[in-house]
Image 1: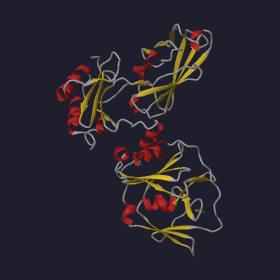
Image 2: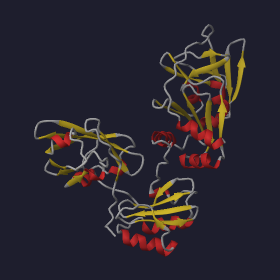
Image 3: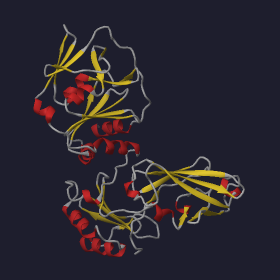
Image 4: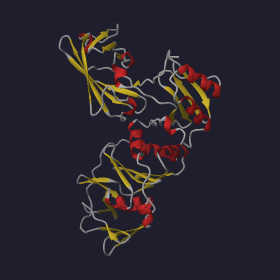
Length: 401
């Protein structure tokens, strides 16, 4: 099925492919509407196909060109036309959509999206990314011809096409965030709800009503007024976690995280802001029992005065760090421009945010590394502690209801 194939292409995480056998005996040129395009590196011929350095041709066409080192994906964006190619892959994806929201719906609905097959692949030659010029240019709607006498690729298109400014500047960032999160859709902000053509009018009205509320009980009442009693709970937590059937999807409410609408294809729109500063997470106490859920770990309480206390469970691996260092001091070192007053919701997905260091009374040290995950949470990683640490959701300013 087209949908499955497109998803598989988008989710591939492959190793870099280096391919070097090319025919460089002749000088190859490329013209656009009669004018020669200049290159830092020369185009090459492979299997009777011309490959060009990634940027020069398509930027000359007025497209925005993006390169993601991990996982080796290029995006050529010309307004509603988005072309995605991966190093070493014959299959490329072309989608006609205004933004990433429409791209996601196109993938699920199998509309306005297609695979295009290239008998030569995008590849890295002498540390430079090369891409087949014909198939990408034609995908953008540009006429392509070849003059064998002069070894020239001839591109023709309307000047108005070249001059048309690109409006979607966030597509590639959203796409990379999507594939970096194992294909989990990135939630949309509550400010995106009103303009979305995929959010039903009733949900838009609910968002308008509840977006400024901070009391979970009041939000619960407003949702009940519009959608009746909830159809069930989506979590066995002691907090309020209710779900309602809504137009083409469901509405979720959590007294910890707020309200969100999820459509039938799994796209998520937050219906209210989610804000929390790092100071609200780490001070006055941080209870890592929210994060550390392996049976091999206990509970670490971090105090605002820099001390920590570890509560040992019966099942604790006696060789673990905290079993040997049940009390000590901790320190958090933020990266980049992050700090205690940073709104966590503004952190970049999968950005390294901070290093949390522990030093036991005996002088032993260990560290946790903190990341922002694709949804409303933080992730922790620590080989030294040897523990499994779950993502921790960022709490909204709700009062418990």
